[in-house]
Image (tube, rainbow, N blue to C red; front, side, top):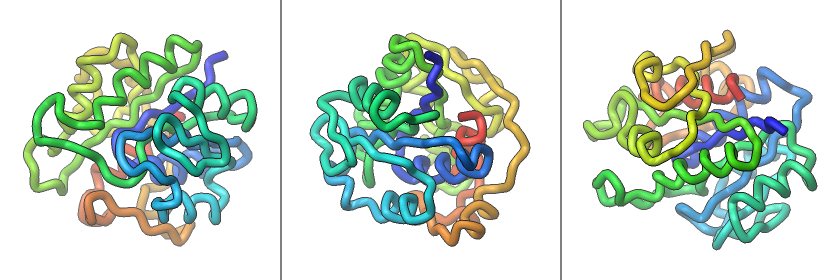
Length: 222
């Protein structure tokens, strides 16, 4: 029934999406579906604990080989179904736990799980929202600007997800529906208000503002 589902490729995006979503829709219920693309126990995530403490998440579902959520699902598809029909989610954020496996090659990363998840959301009648991975602080060229993780996932996906118009490169991505980002506080302001510390690969919001701006924009679209 059009349930909006944001799909992330790294764990730190989940907290940023949740913070921006809660700011934009403070009474809406958000559920996190954690995939098995990285760490398997949800208890390893300090961010999930912090998000629950601050009221950013109304439930968690661990899918596949991951475990320890409020509910556990065999697949991401059934995890989204549980979020919608058992945990009464108004919106869902899907992404792996802490860590990500990658070989530095185009296809050798668990981040490309984003493609089949986007397609699954669309096939189930939901509204897929892609959280773009972008960076102006990552020393690796393949992740600067819009990351190759996002570009590869879009190349593999069969559906056209909603994408916020942050960063600017998102407006020229192929196979997406660009949404003008609603106005809202910056990621740094959100984290300060919530007393929440979020890093990506050890970098703070001040060290990689584009990464967090893109994730916050996805949260507002959600």
